[in-house]
Length: 331
Image (cartoon, rainbow, N blue to C red; front, top):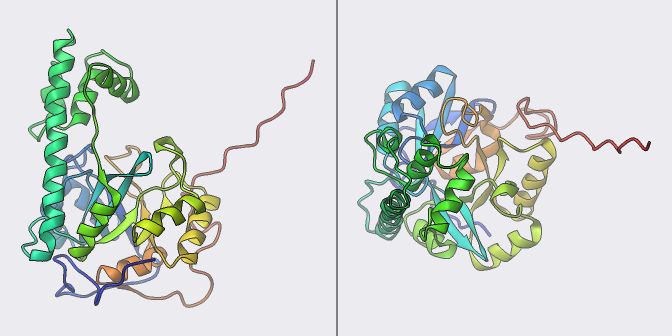
């Protein structure tokens, strides 16, 4: 089901000038956010963290924008960390939203093949910015002032998440869930999306690699199962799924790795870190776990000398299964 490219792509749709070869156990994290969307990492600080903690590769995947990508790449060049240009696009398939990680397309790519994807990204970004302005207007018009909005935006482009966070900081609502519900009740929205097939098609024209983000996160909608995945693949040529993720137990990781391997899909690894400790710091995933995905991005990984690539117990930071419920004592 995966779409093959003539050669591995690099930072501008071509093989990188400087090849990168990793040992199987070297640290990577292919799902990171900055303050360009809903994170709090300064891109330069994020790259410094990666360098200081021994990461060789990271990917900046801000939601529906690539505003931090070039800065992060340049910082990575200075610190010896390969930063993969990426973004996490909000897409729609079926009756719900999904998140799609698109790797390998720089926002300054001037090739004709990249224009459809970059235009789609500009449109998506503009829609989010418009929703932020409208949401703020409606919230303040409802008698709920947002004096903390400037602190939330902090000189960046205002996005809907900044309005939601200001609503919490200014004590109009207790959580993001209630903030989003209030925005909808006031007649606006806090999110937008593009059809999955359109995004994948445009990304593939540019030589990008499309990986479905955190398919096991049931808080965003029902967790992905084999039946739904096969329905998606029948309509849209995804390249891979994120099989290693911060909330996954070993059982979850094994399940998604087996789904991917049985369908010839690439395997992604990502912490989804948005800030220091929020919800987690970048995670040192082993490069070998995403070797084929890295290969598509022009990065080679040394194979393991012996033993399995993945098995239970290899990830000391894996989430632990919830303990079984204890029947209530009968009185």
